[in-house]
Each structure stands twice: as structure tokens, then as C-alpha cells.
Image 1 (spheres, rainbow, N blue to C red):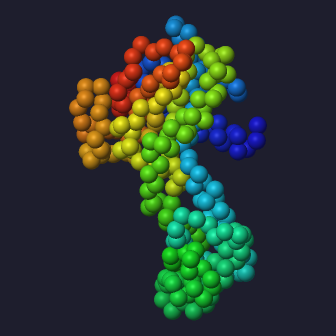
Image 2 (cartoon, helix red, strand yellow):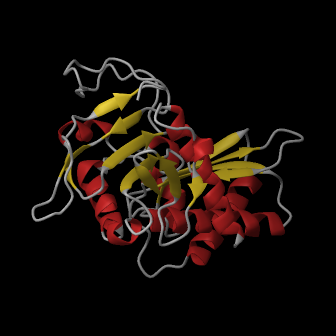
Image 3 (spheres, rainbow, N blue to C red):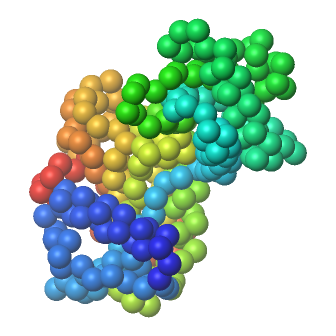
Length: 290
């Protein structure tokens, strides 16, 4: 198993344990790992074998984020290789696209050159490189601004993109439907290993692409052959008083714990041979209430 596969597996185990913490049905220790084409986790229960497939929600912005990250890393590397002093650099990107036909290396070189120039002429503690300086370097359509600050004594330089923590993207219901649809095609294979198949969607807030609109779930009904679909929301936490979502007793949901778990509404597709006892309303499941 490669290092990246191992890291992915460790993260899946962590998310699965958090999922199990919310349910009284079984514990994480009862599960064993599945290997493709089986679901990610398998649990033997009196009613039969249960398979749980886990997938992380991420949008097509992943490529954009990765290119931006590589450009910043390239700029930082070039800057440091030239023996420049440690700085803290905040890079504010403009728009939702990476310049067409431009390599991350070229953008990185331009960033390094801009920061070097800023440091050499720096009269105070920090400086914001805005439209004028950016335009001179052909970057006025790439960045909103670049903030350069001298690192305190004994502190290593740090280059980052604040946008990842502040931009919210409403991926919403349509995005979740696409993620489910991709897994739907694998259900026949999953059912060779188990009698019942659940899908666990995990929403993380570690990047822009993994941010979605929680409010759009209130009217979402998924047409699916999965027996259950859950959403573990690791991004949103705390007070949900402004979100109107119905749970089983049809009362407004006022507050939810950290990392809330939702069971999504399902509808059996036409001509499907899968039968369910009943469809459920979208519900938030508190720890150990099932």
C-alpha cells in the first residue's frame, strides 16, 4: 500500500469511528475492513451482513486548489533558495479560475520576484501588494492582493492562502446527488459481499472544495438503491439556530452537537428490486440516540 493510500485509510478509519459514535446500532470495533470491490467496512449482525461505503465530499474545485497550492509552494521555494529572510506571506487569489495556458511554475516565479522586491523596499513591518504592483508583473487578473510581513525573530516563514478558510461554496443538493450517483453504479458489486449497504458521505472543512450548503439538504430526497445514506458533517459545528431542517417529529432543529450526523431521505428508484420498510425524513442523529 502506498503512503497516500495508507493516509487515506487512516482518515477513513477516523471518520468511521466518529460516525459510529453517533449510533447505538454497533461500535467501530465490531467492523472489519473491506477490500475493493467490497464496501469499505463490513459488520456481521443478526439480521445479516452490513456493508458501509465511505466517501469524502469534494468538488471539481480540487484541481483549482491544487494548482494554486503548487504555485504558492513554488514561489516560496524559489524565494528561500535565494537566501532571503523569513517572511509571512498571505496570497489572496482573484476569481474562481487559474490563468489558462499558464504554468504553476511561472506563477510561482512571479510571486517569488514580487515578494523579494517587496522585502528589499520594506520600510515598516508589512506591506500589501495591490493592483498597481500586481499589474506591473502581469498578475492583476490573478491576485486581489499579496500581503508580505517580516516573520518575528525565531519564527520560520509561512506562505498561505487565506481564501481557503473564508470562501464558502454552495455545492448543495445537486453536488451531493452527483457524489451518490458515482457510488450507485457499484452497488451490485457491494451486494455480493453483504445483505444491506449504507453510504456514508463525509463533509470536511479542510479545503474550499469540501465546503457545501447545509441548508439545501432540507428539501433533498435522493433516489437511490442504497439502504441508508448518512452525511457526517465535520465542517459545520455549533449553533444551527438559523438553519431550518425538519427531524422525525417535524420540529425545527435549533441546535446540534459538533460533527452532526444526518440520515438523508431516500426514494427507491422505479423498476428497482430493492424494497424498504419506509422512507425517512431528514434527521439529525445525536450521539447514541440512533
